[in-house]
Length: 219
Image 1 (tube, helix red, strand yellow):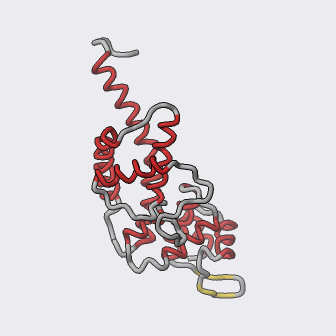
Image 2 (tube, helix red, strand yellow):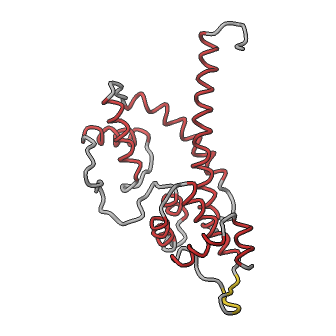
Image 3 (tube, helix red, strand yellow):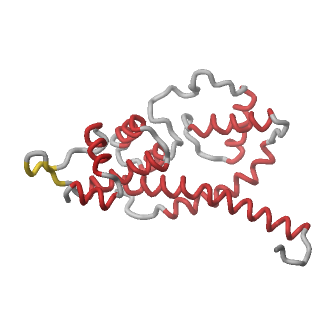
């Protein structure tokens, strides 16, 4: 396909495609004439993933380039691919237990996060970004006078296991096509999150109506 076809099918402007080509995010096409080249379905899949990472997940071009480079070394490990594109794993290699400079999460909150993961029996990578993010969230809750105990969070976490299973079911397909699965994972996860938050709030409204409302339907 020509670059105009690539733009039309991907929804990415030609000028942006040329920028991605210059920056090395997108491999060059097959030359056909001076300043002309053709592209194939691999270019289209990769371009869609780039668009998802930049526009939906909000990564910078440099971060996207690093992530794509990391994906090229995945050796067919789909679990690692999903961890990278969804932000569960950092792109760079960091020693186990390292935390970003300047992070002030108290060790007690870090230990609480670890206790919760252990109580759930979850298999979470030692470099997972989620560990620190969870500890930070627990710290912020405690700072406003709403400390959460592990026992309180376990039932909530069990509900998220069911959501996670549904998420992975949505990605069923050719497990060898990591680029396609990575794109769908980003779109499904990031774009679905606000919908899930809204459903939770609507469910709270429904539960409140069941417990405390009257028989009269709200207007």
